[in-house]
Amino acid sequence: MTEFPGAPTGPRNGSRLRVLAAMSGGVDSAVAAARAAEAGHDVTGVHLALSANPQSFRTGARGCCTIEDSRDARRAADVIGIPFYVWDLAERFREDVVEDFIAEYAAGRTPNPCLRCNEKIKFAALLDKALALGFDAVCTGHYATIVVREDGTRELHRASDEAKDQSYVLGVLDERQLAHAMFPLGDTLTTKDEIRAEAERRGLAVAKKPDSHDICFIADGDTQGFLAKRLGTAEGDIVDEDGTKLGSHDGAFGFTIGQRKGLRIGTPAADGKPRYVLDISPVNNTVTVGPADALDVIALTAVKPRWCGTSPTGPGTYTAQLRAHGGETEVTAELTGGELRVRFSEPVRGVAPGQAVVLYDGTRVVGSATIATTERRKGAATVAV
Image 1 (cartoon, rainbow, N blue to C red):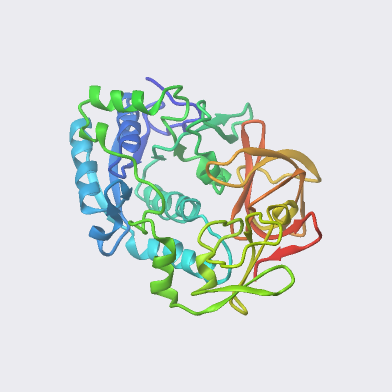
Image 2 (image 1 turned 90 degrees about the vertical axis):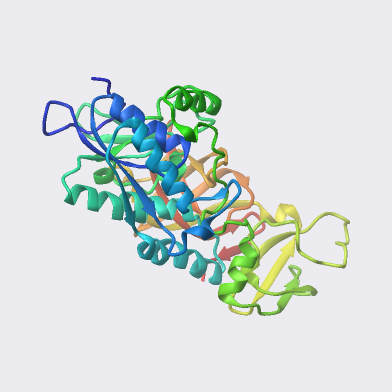
């Protein structure tokens, strides 16, 4: 029987597992389900209906979770030869992901809904239901790997192909969840074209289906328009670091730390250089802008830490990733009073409250926490309210 790195140990039929494969209707999850079935596991496919209005979550290659996606997942399951079901988690998704996203922006923070979906939906609601029904593991098409240590504990690591690595958005998984997770694509050193070629060889019609992009519940990609419809418009000031008014906006929620474009400032800076969003204050609906070097962050404090195993003790040296497709930077970090204190070896830019900081020890994911405050090189601080 073919096995995947870190696969859970089956309590029945040797290492044969009852596996619930989350099938989005895309090529990655279809190939992952096919590999799990080919490995000899007892696989059942499930598509998560996450929208109360499933026609609204896709425009072209954007979004997901439509009736079309459900049908694509069902056809893939038929070709693989596994049972298939659709589970309605729309209400849970609305509460835990969509409403959280809106509330975070209203509070002046910049959330990551994909990370929240993995935490609250795929590896909480879905996994809990799967275990209650007698499944041993949940299989997804994420690119990440699980390593089993000699003592039997599991670690989350980057994918073998770091260009496709998705461990950042899985950094919220705890040891219990990792014990029931399966990532058949994680050790694949192939291009996406080769994954599509494999899907075509397997007869999966999703082989040429375009990938979804951006935020699945904002199908047209217009985050500002989406937020404006739900939070309403409220005119406020755009000011410089001295508080001088430079322009106005229709809602502070429409901006993110580090943003350069779309500021609508008529007066150029004295030095003629571009200005960036430095701070967002929902209390007085004010957006502060300034030069690029004012974005330099040297330290941060993060809350709600989640560890992919045992929590670290004392200060340690790690690398940190701050965005899903961002690079790593060297840091020292220490857990103090339930808060994670992180200091960068070199200043970094574009760090915003609400984002996740994920710590790594080599390729191993140590854990994740939500950024609450940042300390800038010039002595200013951005604070989540």
